[in-house]
Length: 438
Ligand code: 5CA
Image 1 (spheres, protein in one colour):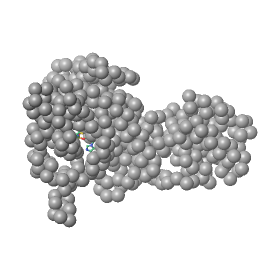
Image 2 (image 1 turned 45 degrees about the horizontal axis):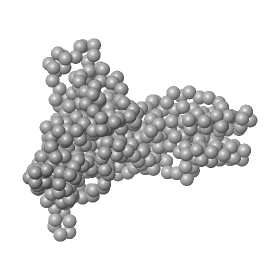
Image 3 (image 1 turned 135 degrees about the vertical axis):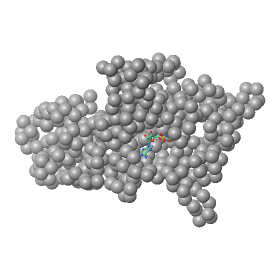
Image 4 (image 1 turned 90 degrees about the vertical axis):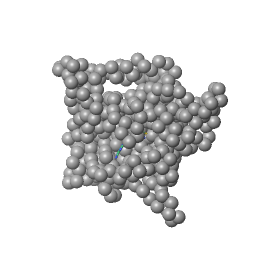
């Protein structure tokens, strides 16, 4: 992509309304703009990261056996009356009336809707297990939207829903999602620590939050130091035994402030191993059995012909919140440092003299070669001062910067900079391409 034809409105100054670094950097780097309180437009660069994150989430869901669909944002209030949550959900639900005076709502989550879809189609235990997920915008009329996309009113969520015949099968579905979450956050360059949590308005008997440690996190967390260092397996056999992976991630003390037990923490964890920190909840998984299937009459025929209510769980990831969490976890004074897997472009190509024909020809050549190698490149071909170009590239945080100017061309080299370390080297173009593509 040529920057001269792109839409990247960066800001030099720190926006006054932003209290935390990720919000400031997301505004400054031209990822988002606020349209009203807690509602954001995703500008091209931000939109691209959103898509990268969504693709990783979808991929890990598919590997764990979940199947993607897409449900609407608007829902009928009647479904929520069936489950009993229409009144219980309270002020956070945005209620809408259509022209026929029918009560609608902008979905804050989809347990009722997916239960409705499934109860109409599933007849027999032979149709199980089933796990369906979608990535769709949600609306929650948060009393205090803040920290940019971290606590928005409109936000993008991945929500998966599992359906099983009995408790054991349902726990297996929960475990698969648990492990898939470890993988997906790890692929995004994040260390997300699972913690037992309160089930809140979703309900149920078991839930875990996945928390990224960051000073600006909204929740306080307490955990054993060893959990931070626990590695995530690179490949997972979902047909194999997942309990050892889960145990290694849960057999030491870890709790959010909601269910923290100070006496237990002190008894179980040596003082030297105690971590008290702040964290961002990037995912939350729930096992709630028949909480929705009973009242909504979602049943299948069991092996002996009897009708059995479905055992369910739901599994959420805050996709738009993840951008904020990743920026909190990965930035420096100059701007964002995108982990490779979620970076909007892999390389920023900087032309030092776009008006010089030789330099332009060399840059166009490098751009064509990068593109041919499948390397997504943002090519700064604008007629701007080099200083401003470098500052923009550092701000938007692409993993590599390749700079081409008249001096380098004379020497037969380009300059390659690694954004994460600041390390620079001069080398011939073909060597630089090898390094980037390898
Ligand atoms: N139905 C369940 C799971 S599918 C559910 O809604 N869970 S949740 O309420 O915990 O939300 C799932 C994830 O969405 C959270 O872990 C969080 O990462 C994200 N999220 C929740 N509220 C917001 C918000 N206001 N702004 C941005 N992300 C949010």
